[in-house]
Amino acid sequence: MLALRLVRGAHPLVQLRRLLVAAASAGVGFLLLCTLGYAAGHPDPGNARASGLRLLWCLVPLAAVVYFAVAVARTDPSTRPRPGLSAVGLGPARLTAIAAASTAVSCTLGSTIALAVFLHLRGDITGLPFDGAAADLLGARAPLPLAAALTLLAVLPLSAAVASGLALRPRRTKPDGRPRPDDHPGPDGRPDDRTGDDQAPAAPAPAPAGLPWGVALTAAGLAVEAYAARGGGGSPLPMPGRFEGSTLGVLCGWTLTALGLALAGPGIAYGCGKLLQAVRPGAVRLLAGRALQEEARRIGRPLGVLCAVASGVIAALTLYGGEGARPFGPLTGLGGALVLGCAVATLLTAALESKHARAGTTDALLRLGAPAATLRAAGGLRAAALLLVFGPLTAGVAHLAALPLTT
Image (cartoon, rainbow, N blue to C red; front, side, top):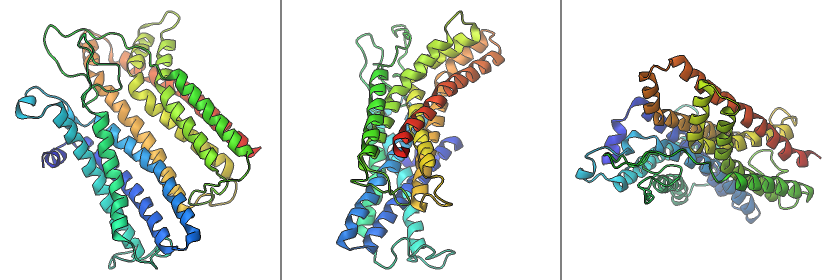
């Protein structure tokens, strides 16, 4: 009940982010129900494998939506520790539970909308425009198993709630009282708001340790993809649409590449910050580099994920863009749009969180007389540095991913 009240009384921008999570959840729920409708409409044993493959491909947009929901939960102001909340029983653990419940509410709303739209397009709900418009595509000739539909729709809210709870759980602190160098040490991505003279000063942000592992995973993924492409057309894993040429090995290789880029993203962003401060930096470059180093862990991973998704989209368009007017089916297009949209929305959410995190520093600089134009120039320089590094990286990974499939 408390989670519902916090959802109702939130700021409009917070409500917008929650509605975006609900919309993305509706898209994933619709894909899952389409898979169930296909399985119900094709009960032959020979189609069981195709139904299983369709369900397997739904895991990609489902993971993207869960990742976006966790990012939104991090920036939810209702989960931030405030003085006096512990006295009424709202400690860090309780706030984490509230964040998980709020995430589950948003995803459940999206799943409910997906079920209503699916039943309407199948023709099970009549009296509205477009009722039964996609009856053949959604397997309206066979009855829909209600228990299976509700089970599939419950997967996303439960996964998002568990992931949010794990990501926002209270973290242990070091012996000197400072949080461990994790992505987000508290329910709102900040250390516990301790006050007093005994609070240790913040140390400079250390370099992220995942860059070598990320490079290794990316190289391994590209190697697996190249090996699978040379292996011929065995073990096909077609997507719903026109992706008949993909294989299980190619999918595994792309997954490894995506994980590697996500793991290497913070290290690459940290390196961009160091490069900005190289060779006698001025005030603008120094501010931009230091801020980028501090934000490397927060925005580096969403940047790596977006880089992986964009490279996959570019490679797919390179391979299949010239086959005709409709190289992809409607479900493939919906899944791709969900993955790409969630990646972009997650990055924007992380950028907003970074802006709130450095609000105190920005106010202090303005009070000291720093021109606002200087701060804006530093922000633009950070964005330009990231674009100049991650843009060619995305194009290069896309070219290497598509190369073994076109030769």
